[in-house]
Image 1: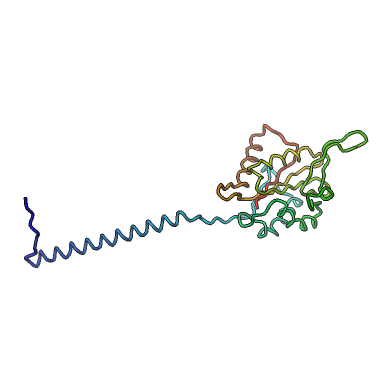
Image 2: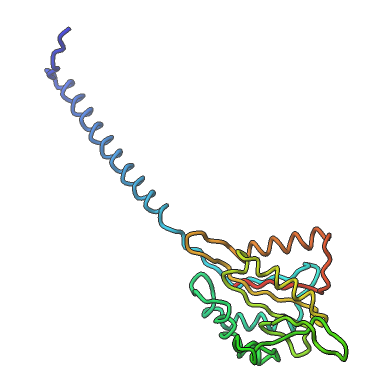
Length: 224
């Protein structure tokens, strides 16, 4: 069958054809706009969303209230937060400790000034005859009365389970009542981990489960 091209021979036919042409042009324009919007949305989704972090802290068990002595340590982090916060700053744990060192000393803490043997803070955990020290652990900072221990961690806090080492060593120190662990909120480039959140969940499980009883009054987790 042969199809003949339709030629409008009346004003009505011509009006219909004009209307159809306008509809085609409208639909074409609408389709192009939708395509443009989808392209823009894809580009936006590829762009990393900017997340804002703040200084976080929590005490375990949750039945405890953060006392004045513990709060004073947290204030040291608050004062220097812009200089240490993650993921903006790529500092190792020693650099973070140096930044808050002056404020910690101001509230009566002994702080490790360097990794040199003379600058290390050694806390005895095992004794021999005549009160001779057989074993001791190094501390980043500790209160004068040695009741509050502060450990500052960076990249390896969660990935290398350094926070577990901190817990073990604090439990071995006979004078320590409170352990404070400072970790990054965010760590990593390609593989990003939220260290504070992951360690928070670990301590939450530890204290809710109650199967393992620690010889500490409490643990304070700080996320910077």
